[in-house]
Image 1 (tube, helix red, strand yellow):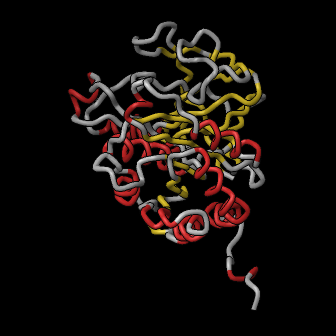
Image 2 (cartoon, rainbow, N blue to C red; image 1 turned 120 degrees about the horizontal axis):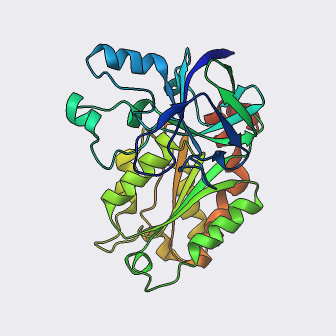
Amino acid sequence: MNSGTVRAVCISEKKGIQKHSVPQAFFMEEWGIENDAHAGKWHRQVSLLSFDRVQDFNARGAQVQDGAFGENLLVAGIDFRSLPVGTLLRCGDVELRMTQIGKECHTHCAIYQKMGECIMPVQGVFAEVLHSGIIRSGDHMKVMPPDPERPFTAAVITLSDSGAKGERADQSGPLITARLEAEGFEVLETLVLPDSAELLKKELCRLADQRQVSLVLTTGGTGFSPRDNTPEATLAVMTRNAPGIAEAIRAASMAQTKRAMLSRAVSVIRGGTLIVNLPGSPKAVRESMDVFFDTVGHGLKVLRGAVTNCAANFEK
């Protein structure tokens, strides 16, 4: 078990202004810090940064003050960047759960302009408040590992030019979401994107690296059309191939229609995230999920580290 000491508690009453340190703050369950502008019903209720990382940065001439990176909690002795999403952080009565690692920097702040870099997008993490209480500067923070029995998380991405423009209702995405939730998954995000390989690659990387979702299911963009870029984008972000799922879907679909052989869908792994391409039509989506859903849970447990031997369950 890791631990550290809170060096600063910081808030900002309005968005767009630098946070300032306060002696203590009240952390509200499922909301965030009282009087902080970034609190709300979302997954980034509290931001945290390692005090040790800031010290190293200041030693290079940054000379930043507490709260300058937009962090709510500055904690010494904990390397947040090395912890997985789902990690529990306990400080007095307050319990936090990490929900995201790092974030995209949309605008280069004054720190970046001065130093040529900013550590918050890489070293900062975000959390949600599970239990209310007060955190003060000087309080002790404990790090607890993620609950091994926690639900698997998922994200659903629909690829459709017309759907992204609002010209066509997304039918497959909600169907996938409903099936995931019925199977006990916690669906963190649902997205509708145009058929853009670059946009899809960006979102797949974010969901796998920052949010560390267990499973990403895409729907659409797997055919022969020049705008069907889903397989190429998926292969471009993989760290390991996992072709069996896509092969099983094609094999089962061939019993319904020979056109199944024209599907270019793939299934891959990025880090600890499984990514599976599904077809675009609701009927095909339903049939495809029936093929792998009773088996995919074992693979997700292996990725999580809860199971180590796939072959143990094979019949000899």
